[in-house]
Image (cartoon, rainbow, N blue to C red; front, side):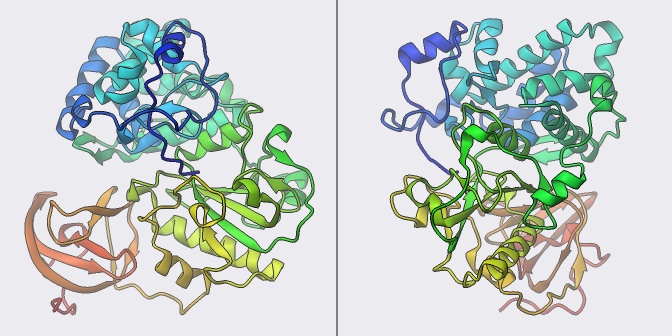
Length: 459
């Protein structure tokens, strides 16, 4: 949804949460507080140490902690700003009527809620303490604690998902990340292939498993059906559909789906799209009015995209392409012009306080995809996961996006920039990528040459 309210100085409210009263519901009020002091959060170089210390202190596998952190936030605390479901920090400690992880962390660690929300080291510590407590209750002790496969039910409990299929969706994503490894924000976790012991979740059908009922429910053939709570949308419409709204979830895919299924949320969207692979879940029928853009709900279809407005690494090519295909389908079926007057960001509608999809959303590329254009061509394939695309061929340049895994790219030209050492190779040549609008080191392009053959030098 993209709201950018800062964390209020919540005094009594935060104290109540710390005491175990789950008082926070939905987004925090936007009326209070200055931006948190940036010196209160761990700098990226400290995060690796924070994970090491928390894992050792609470006897939680480091891979599990890092996997949860990356699934929730890509290891970014977002300056203490809340998620859509009122979760905080890179481990997403939550205070809402269904998820008490923030108040539990405060009780277990003795740390104040405001510090748990804003300080990344404290946030990691709090999450480790909660996971430790859940593991104890599950009877996970001794050597079994070192077996990552056995932590599956504990991770599922940490999610406090609205139902078992959503819990499985969340936990499967964490184990996918553990399997692929993480390299972000100064934290590295080597790939570790694990066959999870799902326990009771082994009998839970994966979210969106297709049935005759679900196939009849979806408006878009590529979508999985998973209905939002009836408390979070209006049956029917009184206006014709004439516009499409682009949102950013301010949270994870599984977390957003779970929140829309929560009767306390009072918010929903028609579709939710996953960052890593573009998976589409439909939660409200297009004929019904989802609650996603306030006074303009009546004539719009809302599409949520997993991620955060201030973190471009979530906006993958897979997500852009999947979303564009969905928008093209809706527009063609509904007779909506495929232009920026009718396909707009949440912030572009009247009477809004939200900022999504924000400045990191590539509208030019997205609208080219929506309108079909020519079939894109590629000349190279990348390898590795979490490869950063920067605004300039310098390590200090801002990150535009991250490539989620091996993918095809079109390199328009190459240029010499900062020297990079990785994968046992040193190289100062950088590739300029057409579709991502930035530069990546040639080290992660599948070609043995430091300078790519057949690619001109950038002017």
